[in-house]
Amino acid sequence: MKISIIKIGGNVIDFPEKLDEFLTLFAKFPGHKILVHGGGVMASRFGESMGVMPEMVDGRRITDKDTLDIVTMVYAGLINKNIVAKLQALKVNAIGMTGADGNLIRSIKRPVKGIDYGFVGDIQEINVSLIDTLLSTGLQPVVNAITHDKKGQLLNTNADSIASALATSLAVSHQVNLYFCFNKSGVLVDEKNENSIIPLINEDIYAELRKENVIHSGMIPKLDNAFEALKKGVNNVWIGKAENLLLAAKGKLSGTTIERNRYDLY
Amino acid sequence: MKISIIKIGGNVIDFPEKLDEFLTLFAKFPGHKILVHGGGVMASRFGESMGVMPEMVDGRRITDKDTLDIVTMVYAGLINKNIVAKLQALKVNAIGMTGADGNLIRSIKRPVKGIDYGFVGDIQEINVSLIDTLLSTGLQPVVNAITHDKKGQLLNTNADSIASALATSLAVSHQVNLYFCFNKSGVLVDEKNENSIIPLINEDIYAELRKENVIHSGMIPKLDNAFEALKKGVNNVWIGKAENLLLAAKGKLSGTTIERNRYDLY
Image (tube, rainbow over all chains, first blue to last red; front, side, top):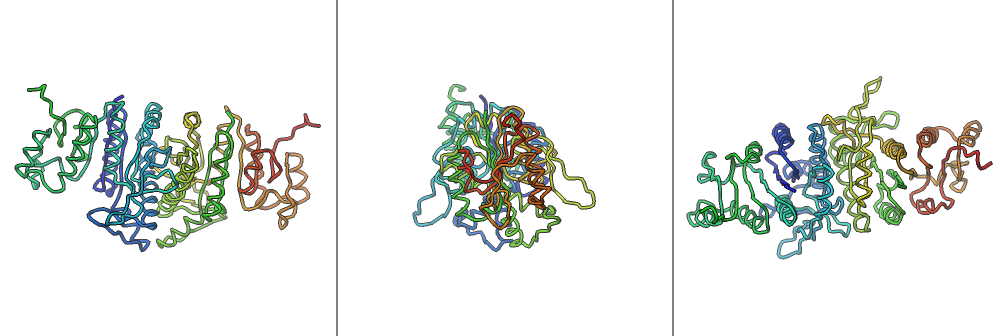
C-alpha cells in the first residue's frame, strides 16, 4: 500500500492555532498516513514548572529519570492524546502510540561515549506487521518520541529518527513518502528569502549545492538523512512548512522534494 | 472468546514494588485480558508539585482545564506507558489506550446538576469491534481513565465505570469475567478481619447481607455495579486483592465472587 509519514515539530505543536490548522490539513491528506511528533518546548516548560530544568548538549536533551518522566507525560500523554482527540473529531480514526505500545519501536539506551545522554534510545527495530494491521483496520497511528528497550525501560528518542526509521522499515513492503514539516518553506538558496525554495534536490544537485556552499550547517544532516532514507527504498522525502503539506500531497510546488537521481529522464 | 477485564486502583499503582508484583501476576493470567487503571494519588502529587491543588466533591475529582492536563499526562503518559513497557518486558503484547485512541470509548461531558464536575466524562459507547481486532491480533489493551467526546475534548472518567462498561459491552458477544482489585481481601463480614471474606454473593445473599447491615456504605455502590454488570450479561464479577488475582483465575477461593442466582443448583 501507499503510506505517507508526516513529521511535525515544535513550531506546529507549541501553537494551538497552528496545530489545529495543521490537523485539519492532515485530516484531508489522502491515503494511509502516520503522524510523528515530539514536543520539546512544551516538555521544557512543564519541567521548569516542576523544578526540572532542561539540560541540552549539542541541541540534544540529556534525559535523566525526572526528565524521562516529564517527556513521557508531555509527549505520550498531553500532546499525543489531544492530537488524537482532535483528529477523531475530524473523522480521522487516529490511535496514539509510543514505541512501547504493541512493541512498535524497540530501541537501546544510547551507550555512553564521552557524553551520557541518559535515557535516550537509539532505534533497533520497527514492528512493521503491527503497522500493517493497524492501517488495514483503518487506524492512523500518531506516534510520539517515546520508545522502549523491551526490557521495561522507556527511552526518549529523536522524532526525526523515528519518522525516518518508520519510513525505511515500511519501504521494504510499501510505497512510502516521507514529509518533514519544519519552520522554513523548504531548502532555500537564500536563508533569509522564503521564496528562494529549491523545489527538487537529487544527489547530483545536492553535490553541486554543497560545493557552492548553498547548503551548509544544520541542513546537511537533514539532507543526509533524507538521502539515506531514499537509498533504503523510500519513494521521496519532502521538507517544507506544515501549511503547504496538502499542496505537496497533490504534487504541486511547495517546499523541497528530495529524490534519487533519475537518469531515465535525461 | 473468553475475555477477562481487570481493574487496578491506586493501592497497586502508587507503589512501584506492588505494581511490579501485580504485573508479573497479570502476565501469567490466562487468556485474553484487558487491564484498566486510573491513578488518582499520583495525579494529585504531580498537580501539587505544579501548583494545581486537587479539588474533590463526594470522593470525585473536580476536573478543571489544568487538572485535565495533569490527569492526561499522568494516566495516559506516565502510568500507562510504564505499565505497557513493563508488560512488554514480561512478554505481554500490551497496547496502552485512552478512550480517544481508535475511538475506543466515547463519553459526554457530565451535565451540570448542582455540582459542576468540569471535564468529566460519562460513558456513552464502547468500540467493541476495535477490541475484537486488537485481541485477535494478540494485543492486550491497557486502558486508562481518559476518554473523549468525539468532538475533540478529552474527558476524565471513573476507571471502575470504564471497566464495567467494557465488560458489559463485550458481554454481548463474548464470555466476560470482571475483576476489581482493591485494598481489601474481598467483601468482609467484619471489616476489620481480612479473613472474614464472604466467598460468594448472589442476589439472594446480597439482599440478606444488606438487611443484616453486614454490607453497607461504600460497598453498596460497588456491589450494585457488579449486579448491574451481571444483569447485562457479564459472567461473573470478582472483588479482592491484586495479589490473589491468579488464585481467582484458577477458581480457587480468594476474594469475593459475585454471581447471579443460580436456582438450577438447588
